[in-house]
Length: 156
Image (cartoon, rainbow, N blue to C red; front, side, top):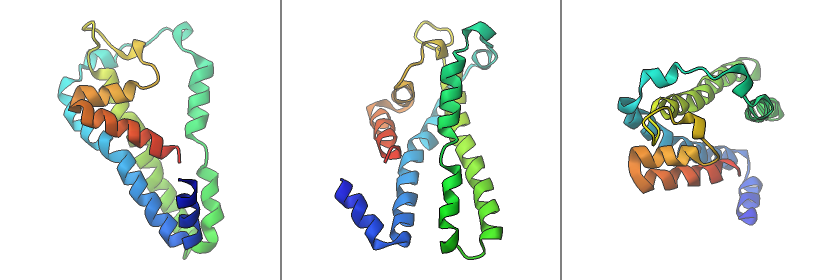
């Protein structure tokens, strides 16, 4: 696998860009399915539950928040490869920011809004892999497997 990625790098920025674009589409598509499929099952009352301040695991929250904000500065390393970077970079970062926020907020909106096994809100029992279970709930084993594969691809 490392040799394949090295070969893509060797082929040049154009190949890497298109491969990255394809992998991004592959990563996002299961959530494009999950959101509309799960929306009818969302209960607004689950979205209005606010945990007590003391229940929030602030260290984990901040760790995840900063982890998700990593690598935004690395786009500048490609400035030499872009025509008119002063115009293109702000536009691209704005579009990317909106897409990234939607890719987090919309699936979480559906997952948090759906009923848990006990009939109440299920978000309190979330753990690593809960988005895959959300995929299974909305689309069966195929979507669950796709979410797991998308998670693996997104770590490349």
